Image (tube, rainbow over all chains, first blue to last red; front, side, top):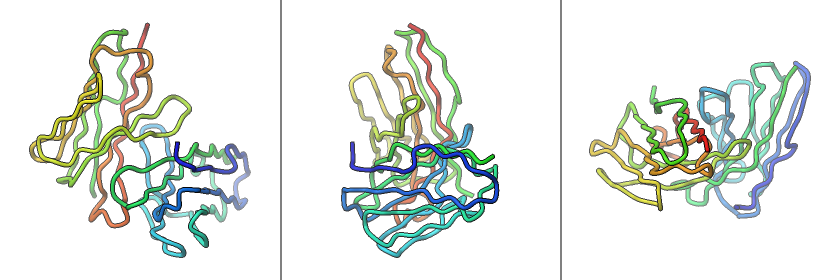
Length: 112
Length: 113
């Protein structure tokens, strides 16, 4: 498996609280992605990064922000969590930006 | 907007039976990828198809890319319990800038021994 870790792996929080999820890679890949996975929706792209400090929105970016200050770390922040953001969040990386993506183990987030 | 649809959503088979999942895109795709996600796991890349009409095989798995590059299929011959999981297709989103992918909803396969 590619060297990707996500932390925390599980989190329960309350509506209105800020939450930050971390994705860390040891592959020195340029491209990093955050997805959320919900039943019946497959994987939907939240934000992605094409380099340090270079990020852009995906298809479901409302309520989320990201930062990438180092090649190896990509942070996803929910400024004020809502119950609709209860989901499983996956980070993925890609070396060339085309071809396969390698996924992290996921973070299960529950917002009460 | 661009859509990738997969059918069926669920498939229950007896071990040894064949299985097929179909993927249809609203737009022509430059390539299509397939991923497998085991229960409780993360998606794992299986294959990428690029050419119109391309067929690739991986042991009991056969992948096809349609002539119009708008549809694809994954066929598993003689399923085994190790095939259990959800199979996703994914295509480049928009102009593919940044390697963005759009995923189908997935087909969840269960195999009864």
